[in-house]
Every structure is written in structure tokens, then in C-alpha cells.
Length: 287
Image (cartoon, rainbow, N blue to C red; front, side):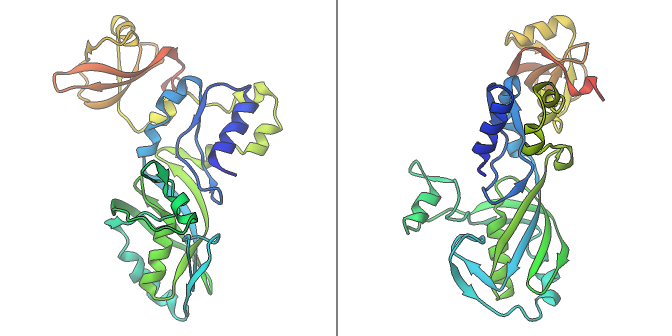
């Protein structure tokens, strides 16, 4: 199921509110797909920049045209002794490095996603992108499959990582399965499946909806007095409190209700960026 298909299912189950998802999953992947409803859609883009965590199954001994199990075979090699060489190979992928995005991706070239060129048999030159892998651990390994825990920066392609690991080992490799377990502070253990939602009535489903500011939990926050809170909701900058935070911040009123997203500038002013239409229940109220 595509990310958009999952989004439309959720919209239908919640009687079609405005909705958006915070980070596309490949159709063959599973795991965490944050869905933002109503006012929360204003902040759906923020988790896209957060670090992601995946469990990836890499099948060694076969490289494919797509970098995953859906593609045609390109190269096969012996996997004998790969387990002994794997830890040293993975060490070369930890930290920052340049990664070339795969042709089978949604990145656009001249207005068209790359996968459309790939399906037509065309190759497009892609500029490498700087990515950062913070954690790359072996969870399990068998004769041909290795399961990895990957925590990485935005824009990291796990199918490319799987392919490149196979290249370094000399045997070829592709991504056989992928599960996203975490985006920033959002964890798959706190999620609910589509099947579970479908089995509930509307009031039961609503209990699984989290406050809108949860997707911003990694950002610092500022509390505002009533006059300042009213001003920022109208889009007017205000003088910030004495709290020493700067940059992008979450805003709350004196009751702990969520107001929106702002930037605190070098002069200490709080400049509204994306504001709620009214104060909302905030996650700080239910801690």
C-alpha cells in the first residue's frame, strides 16, 4: 500500500478531515507513517527533517536494478565468509558521507520523478547528497540475510545503503524488507494499525489521535502571557520571555495550550510562522 493510499484510508475512517502524512514510505515498506489531521497538517513538514530509524533486511549475493526485491537481477556473487567481513564493512558507512540517490525514487528531474525515467529505461545523472548514519548495528545474520538497525538523517536511502554494502563486500546485495520504527520522538510502538482503526467506531478512533504539537516535540518551547498569546495568534511578533531559547520554537499560552510555531530572532522577538487558528490541547498538558 502506498503512503497516499494509507492516508486516504485514515481520512475516510475519520469522516474526511483535512489530512497529510509526515514522511513517505515505499509501498513495500512497513512501520511508522505519521498522519496529521486538521490543524496538525500545518506542521506535517517538520518531521521530514527529523532523524529516522529503520530495521532493514539486506539480502546479500544478489544486486537488483531497483536496489530492492522488486527489481531485475543485475549481479550475483558468493556470500562465503561475508559475516566475518561485515562488521568492518559497516564501519565504513557510519558517520557522514555522500550518497547518490537511486533512480527508483521520487526525486524530481525536470518536473518528473526519477522512477518514471527509470521505468522508461533512461538514466539521469544525480548529484550526491550528504547523509549521516548515526547508528548501524547488526540485529541478526543468517546464511544470506542480515537484519540491520539504521538510525540516519533525512534523505538517506536505505535501498542504496543495502546496494552499496553489497558492493563493498563484493557479492552484491539488495533491500529485501524495510520497517520504519521511529521518526524523531515518534515511535512505532505508540502507533495503531489501519486494521485496528477500521474495527473501531469514531469515538474509539479519536482516542488514538495525539495532540498536534507531538510532531514538534524535538523543538524547544516558550510559554507566553495572555496578551502575547493573543498577539501571536493574530500573526503579530511579540517580545519573548527571558527563557534563553532561540531559533524555531513551539509556543504555548499560560494554560499550556499549544499556539503554533515561531522563530525567536537575535533580538529576542517571537515571530509567528505557522499558527493554529485557536489554542489547542497541547502534549505538555497531558504529561
